[in-house]
Image (cartoon, rainbow over all chains, first blue to last red):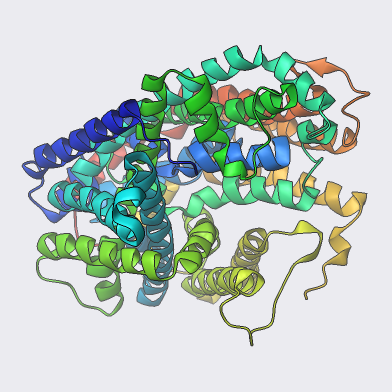
Length: 508
Length: 128
């Protein structure tokens, strides 16, 4: 990206970083136990939870990568984000109520805790913890890398620090997130998420207005794109630029796969009252949709402006958002959006720091039948440790971490979605079926993604799926299939004896 | 190279679209059914399934016909179906169906009384 160093952008970023640090200091005084640290004491209201869920779900990709992808492939890219139309209700119906009720009856702070209680299997819970740790390192490393690149761009540090610019920027961004995530745990996480979520929504809506304004409205922009030689009609055809299997595969993975995302499921444990679920889908759906407006708006405006000759065609599509913001919006709004992108990255990162730390301090030891004596203290230590590991990976293996980051969503989806979503709603699902499904999801997804994209090890075979079939869609389908078939094939005498609390919750 | 040639062509594409669009509603039905009944959620779930399926099929049939097809809401009709039919339509349908049926289906007063009683009996949280 072109470094857009200007005072509004720098000022917004500094104010933003100071505010989230302040929230961390405030939250530190309210974090006194492992329950406070991991699930914010289970005292969070529905609006805060809804905003926290939304902002944790959306990383900087929605603000920067999305418009760039739409510039490149047109409206087909929207299949990644339009499932937000129904996924909030989908999530609450399929898993939200039962996760919250179980967390009210048992000491449940994490998704592997849920797996342990539901299936009574330490092996299944341990496997879920491994999936969470692998995905967390990938997701977190990618966020830290993005944070470093953005801070470097905003503050223009490359001109001063040269080759040390990126590591310095990564350390600065990482230090702020680690500070508030360590000091205030999930209390800091959800309240910074609330602030970050409001900032993201306000920035996205304002930018959408400027997109409509600069492009002359939706129809004018659309007609310019359709009539353009550079883009043409296929740009506005949902199946015009990507194979159907890819486009609909995105829809499948990003809708159904949501049921396995621990950073979203985790938020249900924090709700103060199960009744608070009632209007959460409306708030999550509306706020997510508001954020997606930036993807749609810039994704339409920039090609339309290029078609009109008011912008030059982009060499790097990822420049779509920064170029538009710096050329067509007031400096203060550009600054606000850059702060919004920082917010989106940090809100995702703080969620992963927390669940990654919980996986190390709680879930893995429990899988081996042990407990760490002071989870609160060691949870804080683990936050620093996991951030350090992810940052080192992100710096040393920049290409690899970007690759891992892109398939972390698929890993979570394939490993956890069937065991959680079907397991909480169908008594017959056995621990064996859940374990096999998780193992299948992880192995197939990591194997296919790695073999299809890696360029580090020449001797490994290259695997590619024809007709645009997504590895994540294959692995998610495979893990659902394994779980369903093994459950159907299980003889009646192997049907699990459910824990009474689990049985009670599944009855409601 | 994995060979997945059977994924190419209209029939496999249509089958994939039909399956993907039906899957979310099927999972919701599994989760919300009480004694095998969907109660007040029957109609909203049917509407969601139809909305997703019809939009998916329509986009598939309209593929490559942007110039010939009419426009709606600022977009060629295929893109309008994608944006209004797959995104904004389900947003209102699902969020309102969830909120409006919550008290008398998703989590009834009777359920909450039983839940509170059980929680009190188990003396708060126990080991997970």
